Length: 263
Image 1 (cartoon, rainbow, N blue to C red):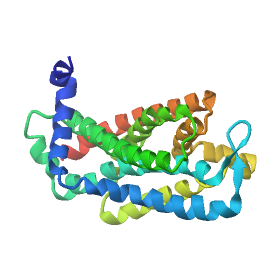
Image 2 (image 1 turned 60 degrees about the vertical axis):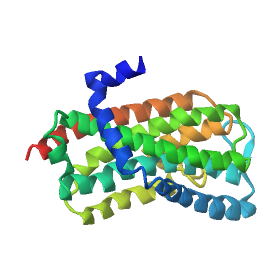
Image 3 (image 1 turned 135 degrees about the horizontal axis):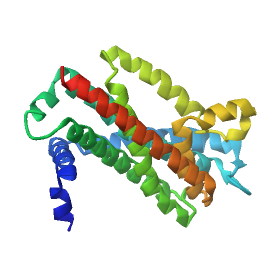
């Protein structure tokens, strides 16, 4: 049945592109460890180091959580975001603008839709792999205290889909490598202020409303709540938000890629 699914026209094209990327990157798997290294450093410096001074922070719902346990799920969501979005921005820009990789790919039976879906699927797999490795690290160090933490896997897939699709749409507007500074100008403040290191309640209500609109905030909620043992309507809202964002971004990306690759 799985083999038949892979032969389906809607799946076969994207699957071929994913297979191509797997072949190309089969000798660079260690780069996944490098991507995990960054959130581990943040966890050790902020979660453990500063956590020793902060103590517990208000949890989601009743009770409280240790600072490292509070920060860890946010860093896990961030790892899923970065792992996926880096593939459809930095990596894809070179193939799209400089190497002209897709010109040769489109000379085959593959279509622009196959390229878009294949790159999103590859980015999603890459981001989820980074998240799973970091998740194992958290479990080993006792920072996963709830059975609901198993929802991290579908949560990471959804975060990866949303940000991979968003990155795919954004990269079609990038004109040069210098434009990536503008992307970082958005990503870094979002990382810092989307409740990564402190709860939403520290902000006044008007600022809370703005923060709640950030996609990373919703991604963090999608991961943090199950890891801390809280599964409620907030998880559903976050999942719907990311699903809508990913679908809308992918639709924009498809139209933009059609124009870009037709030039």
